[in-house]
Image (cartoon, rainbow over all chains, first blue to last red; front, side, top):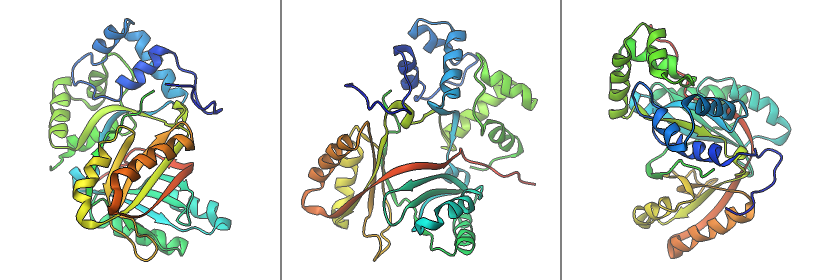
Length: 159
Length: 161
């Protein structure tokens, strides 16, 4: 890869860290010592590997390490939603929206629809209920964009 | 699948993530009063049933230098979407791609594709590749860059009875 954007937020990672970030995006095996094969392939000890993963977590390069649960498979649902928030009310609305435990992620984006969040609920009806509560609190329309079809989810990001 | 009380306790214990120790499943099982083999067997069932998509790391794109994060949105002729959607989804730089309903008149777009890059120029180049694939079936498009992460948590499961 050519020179990365030298953003202040970008972290300096060595080759082993990069290999780890790439490899840890694959599924971890369900056995007693799941990190051992990866440590061996990188030529480091399990302890050294775990110390590096912890450091990547602490610095925020990895936001999470663990199972990715699918709410839909548990009888629940996910839905992408958007609100056109008047810029002067943005911080207030953000606080109101983020306070809902059903809001899994929330991003500010460059559009009249400037707040985009994902609702994750344990029941299919929970989406409409959570959206209605947010509409009531904020006085703003919550547009719902449930996925109709998944074309592919690659997920992986090359470090 | 139907989750029993033990499954729910496992999900709750793992929502924050897996402990970063050499034998993480043994440690989690211990905390729940389960044998490691029972825990891993239950996790295997959850994986087989799709409740767990995978056990893996979630990287922060920004910290990896992927500071430009564009949600590209497309108004594609309905009849062409079934053929063209998978072609867009197969592009190596597209991390998620979905068909979603339009919300007319505000929102004419029916396909979303997330594109990450180290600069907006790079994202725009990738977006041009998508445009080329969609060709005559494309009726309109836009790109929404993320300017701030306002919240990011894993799935939170409330306690039940």
